[in-house]
Image 1 (cartoon, rainbow, N blue to C red):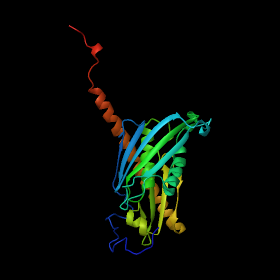
Image 2 (spheres, rainbow, N blue to C red):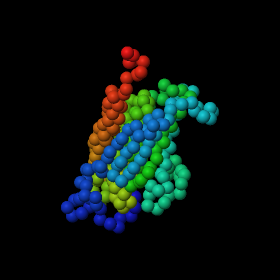
Image 3 (cartoon, rainbow, N blue to C red):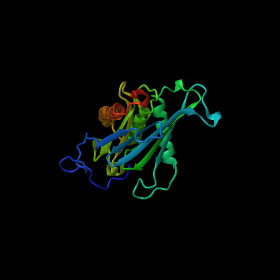
Length: 256
């Protein structure tokens, strides 16, 4: 977290973007956005714009990296050079590699990897525009892309963060709040069981503040989960409607 040199909550208790302490930034999710991927999804979360694509399960190369008992989940997180105001150097950096590893481990917890020995499931998470909270948005949209690919899973993961600004625990930190706030706690939640697959903390919280942050983030994850399911329903209801209007096959038409 950055050093504190600006007010992040006004005298009316509103945050810089007008949100209440327990309010998410606007979120929209679309599934099935890439035709050549086995599964894909796109998320708009505040000013974050993130694409996820899934390929596999497929044979893993090189073969010496294969696990004979299960599939290997490889999440590759990348921020595009143009995703931040100060142009980023292209290619993976230390932070991207670290986040990719964390997300791989989180997704491995929900995928039935034992069904696909010696295979790999590749998840590409591309941040096109970044404005705080990209790991949470990336994990959320990756779960939708995996569902779109038909990968067997116990459930999806919904992810969100809570933190502290101006001494107040708040939900879903924005860019300035992330830069100048006092703490940030991103989590990844399996909503069906309330199991955590991701939990990190940056900054300092009292025990009471930590419990409050966790409650805010977990409640928000359940709301995000509804948006994930709605995106998949929209995707497949649209596909069914299109199938209904397909032309009748020629061999099914009587000649006469």
